[in-house]
Length: 356
Ligand SMILES: Cc1cc2nc3c(=O)[nH]c(=O)nc-3n(C[C@H](O)[C@H](O)[C@H](O)COP(=O)(O)O)c2cc1C
Picture 1 (cartoon, helix red, strand yellow):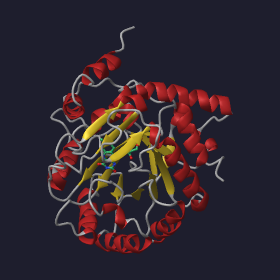
Picture 2 (picture 1 turned 135 degrees about the vertical axis):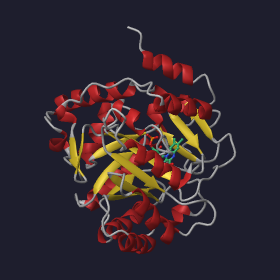
Picture 3 (picture 1 turned 90 degrees about the horizontal axis):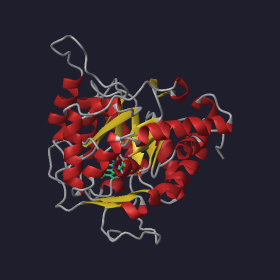
């Protein structure tokens, strides 16, 4: 049988990565995406007070401007995290800034939060919730996360993040505070218990009511650094952590000619560190915050492994770019097979069974 997803991916990979990405988003926004069949109920997840049809989310950075949220949920993602959105529009770093490393199953990016800014982002989200002329609602078919960040210049994090939360809260099912992209100078220095305490205090003061709040962290901190941040997140009323963003490390195993480009590395070379961070944080978290694991997810077995370690869900980006939309039915079939192999009838049964 002809696999249109594979043909579309092969076609897109004939272009440089950024034009290919733009083309893919535009095609999706125009509705050129297949509708995935309904998910097997064994794949459903309840967390953050929300129902997710499956545990496979699209990580932030793919749909930075929230232009293709509904098509991405139609395609079968269990949630879509739009953004990172910044207060003001900004162009990001000079091109080239996005590199495929297919030999390594990886991507390096130094995009630098290119995006349309919060005003346009919110207009795009508002449109999702507006009834169509035929009276139908065209909202997302799965929960929507809004990932927020700060501008490269003129940022005031203790003002900007609370304001961004206020702007996206009418539209988002959950909100992620991104403190971990390596391409905004100084951003990752905000990953401290002291700063997070002040930040959550400011967010709570400005937002008496809000959707669940998650903090997205980098993989490049020492293991001991995660515990104080976790406690600050809990004490400040956050609901979850996303572990992890891209890494600035460059493992010796990389063979691609682009291996030494600067920026954040994602995909297969991130797998073992992302897994290790999850394992470490899950052990100290003891189920208090919801954990979402990202970094090098390529198989259904990877997903079940992270859920067994205490992640409620996973997110992917790189493997979706390298393989295309056909990755979703493959991952779901493999995940169901791995659940059968391990004797689980639901993901809830598997949740945390390997927590140290
Ligand atoms: C091109 C690219 C752009 C990204 N942009 C963002 C971003 O804007 N905000 C963010 O929180 N993470 C961003 N990420 C990180 C991903 O959301 C994810 O955490 C990371 O890539 C690890 O998952 P993966 O190995 O499946 O790609 C980006 C990743 C890539 C490859």
